[in-house]
Each structure stands twice: as structure tokens, then as C-alpha cells.
Image 1: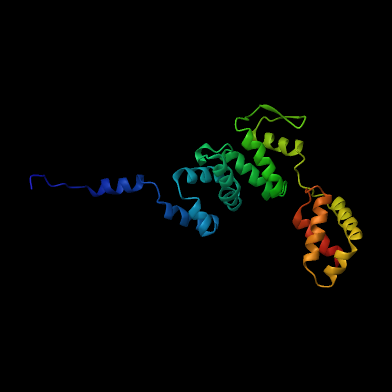
Image 2: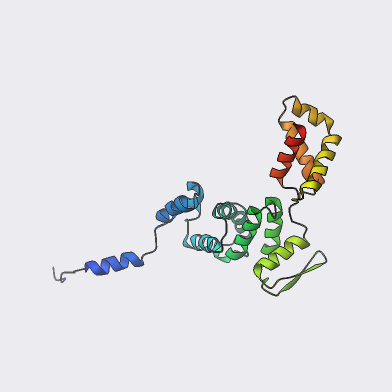
Length: 222
């Protein structure tokens, strides 16, 4: 009873509302709406403010939101757990991850090759503009982050094969060398096609574009 009345001004309340960060559920809803992410991924990306900051930073660098979400909830999360690190201490910066997923989205590298690239970036967190590192007897340098990552892709031989002529030859060679699988596929065994795809990927040292392989293979077997 001895306390004076407390009067809170409406303007102050409204100002505080504007200054408050968005709640995780609100941010998750925005991710689903704006980036078309599954609710599970949106929820996982809003578990902590640091995770939201990392994801939003990567998107700012024009990273593909869906692929970024897949990488953050998959490969990046796995590596962080393995090394006992928090997202704010991730060796791969949001900028670098954005470039990596863009190279996948553009078909420059496959998901498998992207994991090898991620391994290089993970082990070289201090690699910056103008730095030179040695990888398998190849010296790499870059004046920009994108140039550096592209030089790593080249030196490690990670670039996906998109030469239709060269890939068609591999497809025809594999078909000729595996008549049993061809006959099984034509008899209605869909799994036989997977066996042929596997042989083509092996013959191309994993550099063939899987979607292109399936398209050329089905065309050749038609």
C-alpha cells in the first residue's frame, strides 16, 4: 500500500515492442513462408539466436535457402557435434557455405564433391584472401573467397562432368559391358538401372551429373 502507482506510457510500450527481436516461432513461420522450407527445418534453424544469425547471414550472401537449410541441419550439424562446437564457432563461415551450396545448385559440383570441399574449408578456417595453401602438390591462391573456393574445386578435381559427348561415350561403354543389367532393365527390373548408373558414376570417377546420367541412360535404353 505504500508503493506509488506505476503508470506505463503507451508510447514506451510500443517502442519496446518494436525493439524486441522476433520470437523463434515467428521467424520459423517466415522461413516456411518466404523460403518454402519444411516446418522441421525451419524449427531446427530457429532453436538458437546464433543459428538464426548464421543462416540469415548465409542467405544474405545469396545462398540457396533450401540447400543451406539441408547443409546446416545435416553435414554442418554433424561436424559441429563431432567436434563439440557451437554454431558461432563453425570453421566454415556463412559466406563460404553460401558459395559452396551455390556451386552445388549450379551443378558445378555434386553433393559428394561438396562434402570434400567442406572438409578442406573445415580444416583451413583461417584461409583468407590472398592466402596460399598446399593441397596434394597443387598450390592454391585466391584474391576473393569465391576465387579461392573455385581454385580448390579445380585443384582437387571436384568439378562435375557436364560434357555431354564424353558422358554419352561412358554411358554407351557401360551399356556394352553390362548386357545382363540391360536385359533385366528391359524386362522390367527398375533396380537394374541403378546398377548401370553406379557403373557410370564409377567410370566417371564420381564426376558425372547424376540427373544427366539418368537422362542419357534412359534415352540410350529406349
